[in-house]
Length: 309
Image (tube, rainbow, N blue to C red; front, top):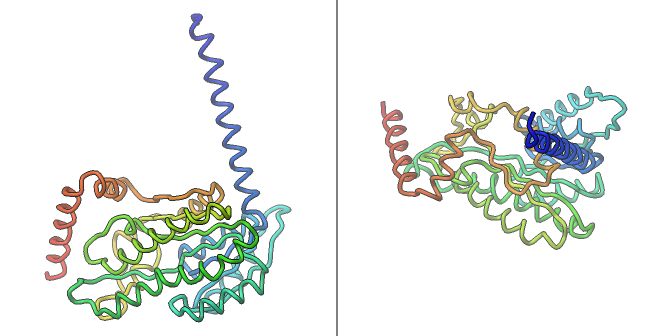
C-alpha cells in the first residue's frame, strides 16, 4: 500500500463512521419525535390509513383514528390492541366518526378530538376518493364531491386544529397527496384538480407556519395497492368498481406507511413516492412541457380507443 492509500483510507473509514453516526442520531431523533405524540389519522379504516395507524402505534404514538365506518374503525383498533413490542409504552387508541366532506361535521369532530386527547401533535390527512371519467361527460356535482372530500375536507380539519397547535407553539401537518397533484393525466381531471389544489394550499401553509414551529409535509405517492380505484367515482357519480392494473401492481400500503413514518420523523417537506416513469413525468412537465403534453395526448387517445372498443 502506497503513501496515498495510507492517507486516504483512514479518511474514508472516518467518513463512513461519521455518516453512520449521523444516521443513527437521525433515527433516534425521529423516534423521540413520534414517541408519545398524539397522531390523528383520517381514512383510517383501510388501505394506507390503516397501515399508518399500525406503524405510528408501534412507534409509540397515541393514535386517533378517523373515518365514516364505525365497525371498520373498531376492527382496526382490535388489530392495534394485538400489537406488543418489548417494554414499549402503548397508548389507548381512540376513534372519531365523521364524514370529511361535511364541513360542519369536521368542525364538530375537531372539538371531539381535542376533548378526547387534549392536543394534536401530528395530523395525517389521508382520506380521499378517486375519479374516472371524461370531462365532457362528467356532472359538475361529481367535481364538487371530489373537491369536498379531497380538498375542502382536509383544509377544514387542518384549520379547525391549527389554532391549538399555534397555541402550544408546535405541531405537524401531513397530507397524503398524489403524483397527480404534480402532473395531470387524462380521464382523472377531478382527482388531479383536487390534488393540485391540496399541494398548493399546504405549500402556502408550510411557509406561513414557520414562525409557529409547525411543520408541513406533503407526500405524493404513485399507485398503491388499495381499493382507491374500486371506490372511485365515475362521470355520473356511480362507483367505478374496477381494480386497475396499475393499482394492483403498485406499492403495498405497508411499504408506503413506513415511508410516511420516516418522512414525519425527519420532518420532510415534500416527498415523491413514485417509480422511475412517474418521476420522469414530473420533471418533464417542468423541463420539457411540450414533450409532456404530447405524451399525455397520446395517452388520452389510447385510453379513449380502449374505452370505445
